[in-house]
Length: 263
Figure 1 (cartoon, rainbow, N blue to C red):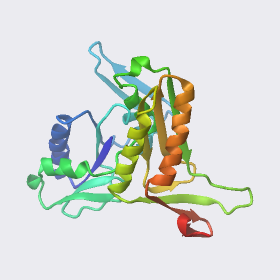
Figure 2 (tube, rainbow, N blue to C red; figure 1 turned 120 degrees about the vertical axis):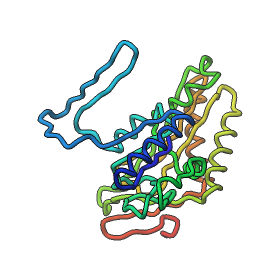
Figure 3 (spheres, one colour; figure 1 turned 90 degrees about the vertical axis):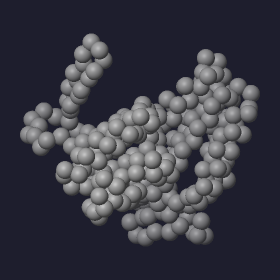
Figure 4 (cartoon, rainbow, N blue to C red; figure 1 turned 60 degrees about the vertical axis):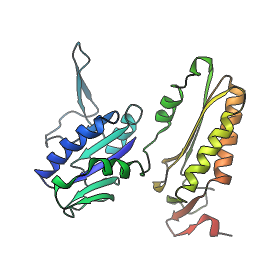
């Protein structure tokens, strides 16, 4: 799922949201996220859903973060368009230098100057938002899924301590060799799919700042049987670690270092 925020002031923000949502919904499945009015929520830990006989629905609840919402949406959507949340660390289309906490994907001096086709080309260069569930949702759509008896997965997360006496790691920062990293990942997945009984292999490694305890890498394998599926997961993560140019900086409470520079 590709994420896009809108950094603009009303009424331009609403006009951009409408135009971009119309365009992106013609290119794939789209989720639009906008702020609720400020209300006094008296209930905690609740969700409420409304559904009609045609399948139209709406929902409300409590204790939801933007990242959690992305996690939910990623399994069913190609794009998520975000309006009114300029503090998120996501790509933005920016009007007249409007401030935000993410990265600037496209900058405009007027909402009328939006080139939606160029916006889409820029958006396709951004890192997709993937979760374990979104990758599983993709592999089960394989034309060979009816022959598969196993889905094997690996999830790597940011470890706070290597040993109990260690200084805690607060976060990791990952950078990739753009273009080369994606090509290597695709080649590894293609190689592994040549094995007997393996139908789909997907891998995703996040880049940027990843906090301690957060997930950072996923491997998903759809196979005929568990033995070859588990073996392929292990080989996949090992090849990713050894062959894909992704560089890791470790930030601890008492300092930081690039892992490949440390003796």
